[in-house]
Length: 465
Image 1 (tube, rainbow, N blue to C red):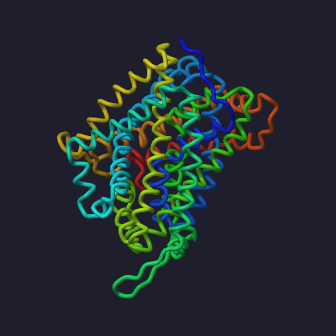
Image 2 (cartoon, rainbow, N blue to C red):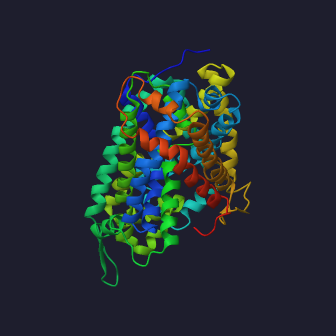
Image 3 (cartoon, rainbow, N blue to C red):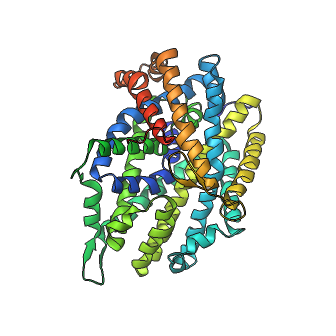
């Protein structure tokens, strides 16, 4: 069995963890939810939840990783005998996510190449995205390229691969986000009827709370949406933070690192909204802000860039480069959660474990790509949405398994071994931990209730929210 690697320092760990957290969920889901849920109201609730609910789950998972020095598959049974099934579910989440994340990574590659090669106006045309994903070979080829890029980095290990890559890509990503966000605030557009809209007006819609006529039901919808977004944003309940936590040195200040990850992630999520909402509002009005997910990134935004004229292509190149970096840093962390689990459970070498996961992700990734042509079907999910292969995998991993993992983790830590198990690990070097009381209350009482409500809503049982 290979000697367990570790991050070279706190900066490397924070950047890698933040890189995992800053992914497609921040870029295509956060701005949409903010626009849908009353702008500043969603932002305020999200920040409060991030500092309480998100903080508790993030701290718990990182501390579990460092305490056990194990990956998600094996960590839970090391905490308490008989809890191996939770480890299996926690490992299943990234194993299910990886193939479809790579498929989407291939889509990002396609649009990045389109803008680089000057095909950006074609990319803005109606039917371009649908034509691309329903074609048979191009999506598969680009998915494979994206997956191989992840594999090369994982094979290089924690220090030379994940940490080195994060130290390069994350600062570049942050700079690109800031440049695009600032540009989005400076733009204006006049419609054929003479109506002029500006980026600053769009920014106002984004950040100012819209409480007009809000009901109790709508308020709870915002809370549940913000809570669901935290899973995407902080990479909790995916086994990732347990795996990364297991590579953190015993001397590192975990409490300080968690705060830095929270700040980095929330800042990027906020800036993603600044990049997207003002630009979409300026060129497409309020109705254009209803798009989310792939529709926002691959249909609406190319049209926005086309409206910008000569600057549009350059902004598009920067944007899709930034999205590609964000997708890559997240995909690497997802793959590492599975690879480290194979290494710990089956005592494989890193090379062997990576190749096994590569084969699994490759086969499943091809099925995902074929889900839009050869393997196309439509299935109505319990939450009412209509799904294809990718949507079904996303629903199983994010809406079913992740709330279960987070809920059962809270039960294990809050009621079986006690929150002090986590607090002792965080303060093992005598560090101050000002939010210890908050962590106890969240893990024992508040988080389990919130997670149970989220789970019931995800599976279609709770429809009043």
